[in-house]
Structure formats: structure tokens, C-alpha cells
Length: 348
Image 1 (cartoon, rainbow, N blue to C red):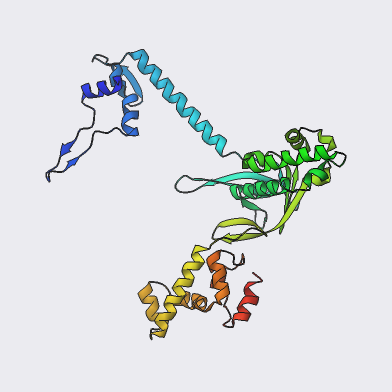
Image 2: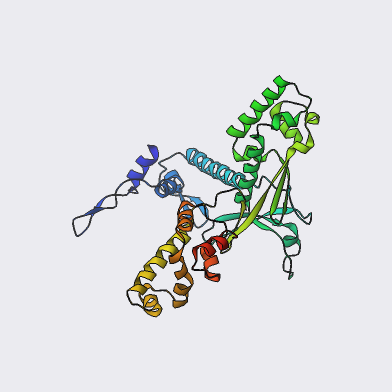
């Protein structure tokens, strides 16, 4: 209230004004920018700012200088805490735990988009150590997506009904029942960060990801001695495929649903529209001019108008094979026979 009163006295509150058309604009509501300007303006404390320096002014203070200084300290403290939270949110929980087929460690890395968005990755360490060299191959996987896959593998392993009995072979029936309940509860209620805290190591090779849990961490969750846990039961794995679209790469587990491909669905709809125009007597060139696209693109996508009904249904349901994408259609032709289509698409 004191700040608002001071703003009124100095005439800095925004006022409504009437335009030549009679409409009212410039409402008096405060925005975050208005409030921040008021709270950091030294005029209210009897001071003036010149560039980066603040000097004592010749006008009387409206707010006590000590109170204004305390507000500045509080604003700076809040900004520092906010930056610390942002930094904590983008930590890489699998740092130092991922290794590729050569034994090279995957290290956290990041880039920023033009809008300032921070994109995290895990990349093979040799790509960093030998940056600038030609013909250096390695892994570069989006961090958030890889962490999601790892968390899913941990959750699936812990939820296995037979895991409790296999973890501690010397446990009696009652103890196995207690362990099963603890594992199930942790698998259901834990967030991804808690699940990833159990990971000791991840090994990635072409087409396969293997994950090993930390016996000590799991022992704490189950409240048992870690030495009683069978190490062979702490491992799990799954085949995967890499899916690329533009510069984006995703690691997809073999049993994961692909999901609806809106780009592919949109191109199928376009293909049907273009085919209707061809039946009406238009040429590829005429359609390209009308649709603001290229004749070649129409020729590449027109085959999608002749998909078998069951393949079209799978695309609409999001259960199509992983490799059946618009990018694939740009590089390959689809056979007209539906049986041949099914045989080809099933291999993607």
C-alpha cells in the first residue's frame, strides 16, 4: 500500500485515457513490470539514478531509505533463489552412469535454441574430447527422453511379480510377501527422479539398452542388507530403435506404442485430396500451382491415397510400424497391391 500511495503522489500510476474515438485505453491495473519498476526506483527513497550509479537527491524521501535498501536486498535474494531452482531442474541424473558399446562414457551436454530454450543431451565423451576431428562417430541422445526410457525400465523391473522371490533367495514366504509389497509400492508411487536414483549403470549398444540397479540403494528401499540381494536380478534390458525426424532423435523401446503421427495423417489426407483432383482432370503441375507445393512432392506422396484399409486404420490408431513415416514415403514408393504393402510396411 505504501508503494502504491507513493506512486500516486508522484503521478506514476497508469491512468485511463480517452482516445479520439471515445474508447478508454491504458487501464490502471499493475503488471509485473510496473511493480518491479516501482520497487526498484530510488526516487521514492529520496535518491536519483544516473546510469549505474545512485546519488542522494534534493527531493524529500517518501519511503525510508533503510526500508528501500531492505526491499532491494530481498529482490536480489529472490532472484538468486530462482536461478538456483532453474539450475537444479536441468541437472542430469544419469551423469557418469551411461556407457556405449566401446566402453566410452556418455557425458551431459546442452545447446540453446534461438529463443533461449536449453536442450539437454547425453553424448559419447569422444565427441567432446575429439571435437573438430573428422569421422568421429558416437552417440548423441536427448537427455529427457533417455531418462524417461530408463525410468520406465526401472519401474517395469520393480513391478515384476516374481522379482521379490528372485532378489533374496533365502527369504521365507512372509519376507517375500513384504518385499513384493515394498517393490510394488515404490514402483507405483515413485516419480522418475526417484526411480533413476536406483540406477547404477546403463549400457547402450546398437539396438539394445541394458540397465543395472544399485544394490545399496535398493537395499535401503527394501530395508534389507544389500549383500543379501542376488546381483543377477538387478539387471534388465530391452531392444530399441532410433527414430529420427529432422535433427530430433528418439530412442524407442520395441514394445512402446509409436503413437499418432499427425504429419503422416495429414499427408494421407492431402494425398486423397490430390487424387480427387486428378480424377477431376487436373495435372500434377496444375495441382502443385494451386496447392503451393511442388510437382515432385505430389508424386512422392500420392501413393498414400491407395493404402490398404487395415494399414490406414493402424495409422489413425497410432499402431503403425515405427519406420513408416512421411520421411520414409519421400524416399520410397509403395506398391499398389495391398498384400505387398503389408509385407513391406511390416518390415519397417
